[in-house]
Length: 351
Ligand code: NAP
Ligand code: ZN
Image (cartoon, rainbow, N blue to C red; front, side):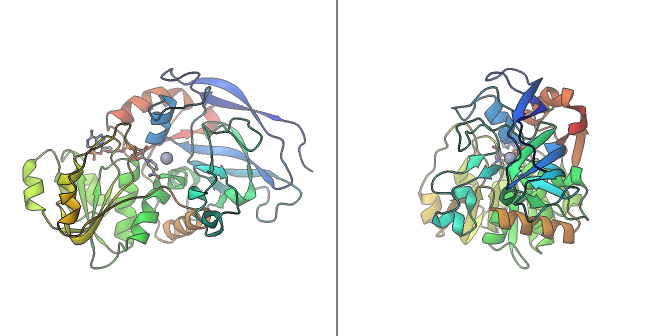
């Protein structure tokens, strides 16, 4: 049986840019032949939610229901669905559709769809209707844009993997984090702490570059062999020319010249942070040492499944602080203050 009516779900939404999030009701499309209806159990709070809810990247669509780290259970499957059945544990990440035909989609890089992927929220779907994210009780998605959460991963610690996990797994795997490679992770927040866990599990020698030494014990427990404060200028002298790979997860503009100087010859700095302001760069930082500065954005569906399977195999979930939905606004302030250990996750039963 397929539900033909529009569903009504509870959600937390930002009614306007910079306004606090509040409880509301949103429509979810009827469950189509290829769709699954998911009862959301947990939703992670990504710093991107805050950038967008506060319109830091511009062109926000309001009311906005953020949330692209979704873990839940299938409660209904459309008539043509082949992969999922009611009761299955699934996740949804940053996008819920793409053209499926372009070179990028065909190569499994749907996040780089040449016609533009459809964001899980703050986007318009094929019908021109706004998409609403995971701070909600239910979501309806095409089965092709869901992934399976392995049984070994509890849903609450799996939720953040749908963005933070894949955003670090993808560049670490593409740029060869592994045995014999020195990898630095800049910023020990939601993304950064998964970067430390994943790079360590891949066999790399991991260093954390954090603003202060406050999180040092945590960083080492997560798998880092070294931890340095970037507020100390001596750090940049000491570590000059040290790393094969640096991944920056910092949400604010950085002095990229300083971080590039920490790379070995032919090393690469991959930036995944998405600050609201531009940064400047002295191109000599790249010419010298034939260094690479690259970017990376989440990952495709198949790669996200690969990441979840890798995390299950290595017992890697996120370190989370579970919150009620009425604590979202407070959690946002704490993320902005770098006071998150290391991901806030909303218990969707409190929405
Ligand atoms: P987060 O939990 O707030 O972590 C960011 C960390 O950056 C902080 O914990 C802090 O680490 C460091 N930091 C913050 N402000 C800083 C400053 N002014 N100078 C130096 N370091 C600073 O955020 P997140 O959820 O991990 O997201 C990080 C960024 O990645 C955001 O901009 C987000 O939008 C972006 N993002 C990108 C992708 C992608 O696909 N590329 C995906 C998801 C998110 P320390 O306390 O250790 O210094
Ligand atoms: Zn995210």
